[in-house]
Image (tube, rainbow, N blue to C red; front, side, top):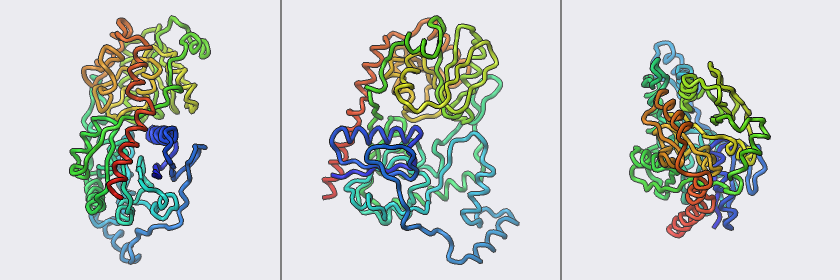
Length: 429
């Protein structure tokens, strides 16, 4: 059985999860190949997509389209706007800091590529900007398993349907105001997705968290499809508990300091919730705390708390050292699936503090391997950090890691996928 995994990129959280599954399948002897639209890494059995057949979504009447566009712009008739014009207006008006929004079309014909034609089973992953819904599900004749990494496959374009955008003076969330053009584009996109998938029967869905499984199951697009639950898996030999003294010495961090770790590629992304951690730490304002951070953007604090920004780190063994030197990892995300960062931290034996959102409560046993705050607020996060610094958690680092290995070992995930692949393949032969 030949399995083809498809992902847009080879970097980022979803890409890492896809690559880890691919590597897990190879370790189990599966003939797995990985197809990427953008390829920057040397990954075993990974291939760059070469577009031999370009899809054309342009209107057959160019002049009619131009006239339609001029009328729509002059009178602000968004329903008359061609999609390209509507996209431009959409992104111009969309609030800064919101998560990515993707449209369901592309100019790439995945079914024309040789790796697709050779495969027995297709495993879609994060395919925004790569998958063209209409053409793919019309041309595809192979069974498809779609691994969800966010909500985009079953929404009108939102990768996370964010209900919160901003924070008030009391440190509590502000309800997001969704613009009419956002609603209009989302409805149009969702209708396109529904129409594209309606005739296609051989589609199975996989969600890594119970939260995303539930959201997908309630969605208009996937409510009649079975949504399987298979959590992410990691290489437990790479992410492991490392000597804290050695790690601290390497980064010249004193052992008597309390190190809080924060990991995010961008602190300007509202969903990542850095502003909640920032305000919580500023309220604590303790000189014995160091905020250690990984990512492109350096955090800023108005307090006596020292910041050690380590920048972007690609070497996973170095990342495991950073988790090991920390006392606690704080993830203030306002929405999330099954964050890789939480799995990485737990496998390194480092407890986690997070909000009661998405799949995070599924990973943290409150008081044992971390803490879940009472609510999404600055004060609630501050209280949880204070409680941890005073009381810690009941599990030792070794126990935290042992529990994580049982659930998130790469081989556990790979074997669950192999069972699903075989089941789907046998039904189609």
